[in-house]
Amino acid sequence: MDVLVAYAAALVSFALAGALRARRRYAWAAALTAYAFAASAMAWGAADGWDARTFRVYYLAGGMLTAPLLGVGSLLLTGRRWATHVALLYTGFAIGVAVTMPLHGSFGSGIPAAQDHLEWLPRAVAIAANSLGSLTVVVVALATLRRRPLGNTLIIAGVAVAATGSGLSGLGVSGAGGFVLAAACLLYLGVAGLPFRLEQP
Image (cartoon, rainbow, N blue to C red; front, top):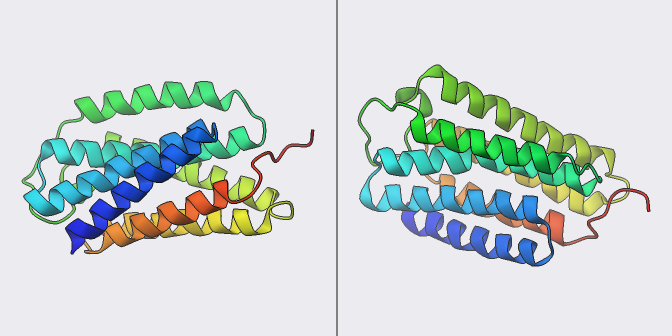
C-alpha cells in the first residue's frame, strides 16, 4: 500500500509541476518536481528496499530542495527577482552536498532516518534550508492573506502537511506517502487556484 500511495504522490506531483511550468511559475514548479523525485524515491524504497542511491535522491529532493524552492517561489510572487539567483546558488550547493556526503549504517525497508546515516553537516544544511524556506512561505502567505485568503490558507496547510509527513517519515512511521500526496495537492491549489501577482502594479 505504501508503494502505491508514494507512486501516486510522485505522479500527481509531476503533473502539478508541469501545470505550474505552463503558467511560468518556475520556482514552484521546481519545488513540486523535487517533491515528486522524493516521492519516487519513497516508492522505490518501499518496493525494492532502500540503498545509498535511493536515500541520496530522497534526501536531496525532499530534505534539501523542496521547502527552499517553495520559499523562493513565494518571494518571486512578491516581485523579489533576486531570489532566483539565491535559488540557483543554493541548488548547486545542495546537489554538491548530497552527492559527496558520506553515508554510514545499513538500510532496511522503512524510510531511513537521517541521523542513522548522516553526519551533522548535511543534516544542519537541510534543517536550516527547510526552516528558512518554510518560514518564508508562511510569512509571505500571512502578509498577503487579506488579498488571497483561500489560496494562502491552502498554501499554509500544504506546508504544514508536508512538515508533518517529513517528521513522521523521519521517525520511521509508515504512510508518509499520503502526506506527500495531500501536501502536493494543497500547494498546487493554493498557488494555481487564484491570481499569482501579489505586488501592487
